[in-house]
Image (cartoon, rainbow, N blue to C red; front, side):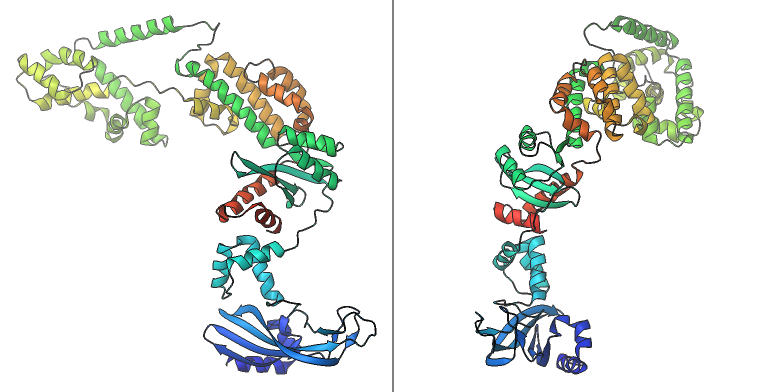
Length: 545
């Protein structure tokens, strides 16, 4: 069935079919249609015998003239649609009416001066609000609508701005137009999540002027900028100010990170290097020397007795970790072994399989020398073999390699690397219940060596509980306790300067979460326009999208 036949059939069926399939054509008769490649044309005329006067509302039927008017409509089947409307010029019968004559506008199909139907105009307005110029033009082309980027920008700027109305809970935050050079202010209704206005700067006077022009704010969510706080105090003194919880926590994280950076020696030295802390380095060094002497006495003759004990113990430890579900990398890290060495224990069915080369041979007289040179750091098997060959060893290099492999398997485990400053900071700022067992153990070791970090961890944990549990009533006691800590004293002083806003943030349900989300969307809109749009167009998109 052709498009022409369909249109004729719909015209004969009355309003029911048109209202379902093409509701905007219900007020007109479709006289004929033509369908070509990429284009559908339709010729229509009004159904009504007259129209209401746009000035006085009187019903008018007297025709004074006719003309044809072409309107672009939404695409059908991926093809452009043009509608030619037969318009009648009617005369108003009311004496004294300022509209002597007027052109009828079938409702839902035409408005004054428009070249597009309301349906197509609404689609283009939505495209312009979401994508603006170039991107919107590309999308419209895929929808079989030819429109330029300049037209879409004009459509966007012509959209009416939504009224701010009464905003009981207001959110205020800034965003950069040009980072480090120009900033604007975003105002949001926190109850509905709708942007209500965008100001061209972040000056106190501008925000204060807007608040005076739009009274009624009972709660104001803001960041910790002093300019916004002063503007709210001046223009809306009765509003409760709520600091942004994320910024409060972020500030605490910064101070905690700086404190950990100042105590990096306590993290890496194995003992606290803070002033006034007793040092146990001499005792630790004596213990290490004693252990080293015991190891040398145990295998001083170069025999395999001490090596066998170490190898059997490590083989058992690796396979215990394997049976517990640990991976090879986890087992190597737990035992302080390299992945290659741990892999030999991992793949060996028994410790005896690793010790089968430990029997006596012609290498026995040279084993003490090999072991001493190995402990001195000479690990090149070829070099060691040349040394003992020069001393009269008649055997092959393979025999030397097999025995030195036992030394490698029994080499002292490398101590775990100390945690980094970033790791310790992350552990301090994480809920202890969410830390793994190894992370908790390493953090406890660090905190046990440094009393200042131990106190810092307690203050941070207490503040996190206060923040997530909305326990603002504990803020005074926390400030009294944390104010004596050298790392948190500046943070506590900053909270005292903005005390009521911070306490409201720790007590009330309101936060700047929605505001930060809209701020992120604003940056997305800026990137979509590649920095080509000025502030008026960006403001229109923020309010319209």
